[in-house]
Length: 102
Image (cartoon, rainbow, N blue to C red; front, side):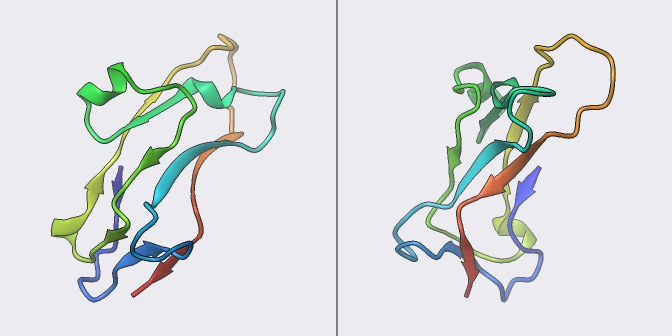
């Protein structure tokens, strides 16, 4: 997936210590104890990085992501199904730290 804005005039940054603290993207389990665990998700900034990524851990992006398609940041996701049960699981998603726009 890609992180960023298609609009070149819109940049994104963390509202906690803006321009200094990194933007973070993390797996989120909305129903802990049922469905899939958050450790079924690995995130990385490259395909090769998935091999050493920590399951369930956040990935840090730059403190500011400039707008425009050319500045979008690629995020790689590896999803495994440790439950090995049939069905649709909707409890896992991705979240960010609080963000603002420039």
